[in-house]
Amino acid sequence: MSRFNIGHKSWVIVCDGAKALFLRNDGDAGLVNLTVVDHQSQPDEASRDMGSDRPGRVYQSQGTARSAMEDTDWHEQAEGDFLKDVARKVEKLVESHEIKAMILIAPPKALGLLRAELTSLPEGIIRAEIDKDLVKLTVSEIEKHLAALK
Image (tube, rainbow, N blue to C red; front, side, top):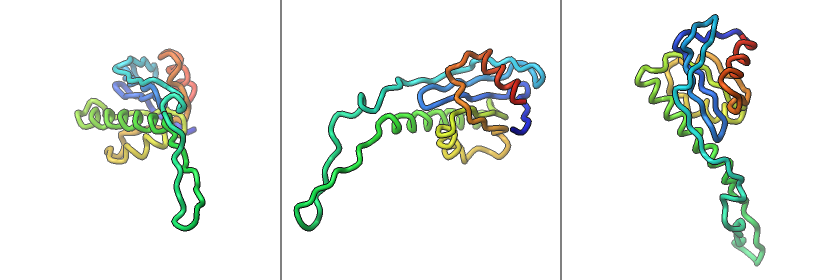
């Protein structure tokens, strides 16, 4: 992994499909001291608990054959909507000049969705992307992981 710098007042956004932590480095690049500025979360329900019916059926245009339609993955859709909300919040923080530099930390799938939503950010705001699931860790454990990656 390439080296990256978490400077004073840089932000670290740690998220997955159900929880997001907005952390700011109140220390310096040598001694990272992350402070929780905000957090977002949503219930992490299984898809079977969100959907109500069986998948639909479609009739062929000729004959009597029918086919099952693919069932909607409600869990995946809820995660995507949550990550879009996180991206909108990040964009607002960048527009208000609160975030001038940040590091994104998310599992690979969530990182890909965030990357697609954050294309309008000015170049250089995102200093690094780390594809790890650290959102369930404490802030001090996240600091240790970042120190080990430097």
